[in-house]
Length: 332
Image (cartoon, rainbow, N blue to C red; front, side):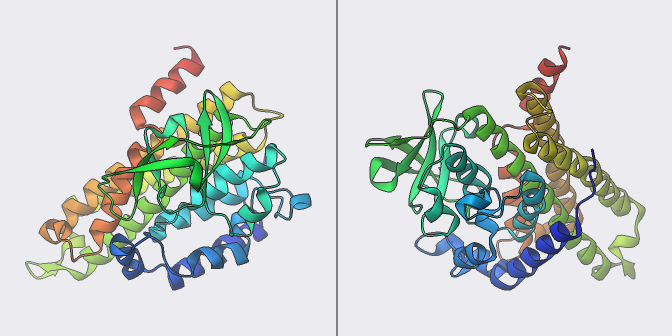
């Protein structure tokens, strides 16, 4: 088992990072709060052109034929950038489900023509971007189905993070059965992808806070020179460095079903999500503490990542729920 990322995976991650920096800066995330569909203009097409939507699609279907290990750090970068699009739901859950079912719908999905979100039992009642996507991959009586936009109704729901447009959905029309796609695996992929985004948000909060306390002076010297501030930030760094390898390990487990049965896979995913949720929660609290009153203000960008971090920490299971799942897998 080799955990080191390849040069190609590193290059792909770096390219996507540059794309997000160019097309999805903080002002674009802010704009998504108030625009009609909650999207970033041009970003989805750019992701499709770069092949990000096709990472988990097999080559014979026109995809890149990569696996979760190749996708997980791209989702980290999505968290770091605060991407409001349902990238994780589409690329990490919907596309592989369509591929496993041998669905002809996959071509439009990886090309970006059809934009998916997901409605899974592990995600609770609210669905991200349900009002603006073209279709859903939904869990219905334990099975996965593909649902076009005209076959479900949407009722809006509030979110602490206004760039995460949430809604409750009700299936009302004809769905395409995705036989061969595993609902439990889809839920694990969603939890893994959310954990990866948590790591990205935590890193963004740490970087922003380190920059701030280095520039902000009090009593004649930088705030960051005080030991109490250093301790807060060191704890955040420890949390990130502890949880990120568990996320990468879980990606390996999901990508290699031949050596990891569903119980082992679920254990690894839950270890990753529990620690990532803890890490991003610690990052949010420390960032707010170190910024002081300015961190509460709407005008300051910190609140974009505070809200995203706390939302993701609870999405697809909070830390406590996933620790319980680990305990069950270990029979303790």
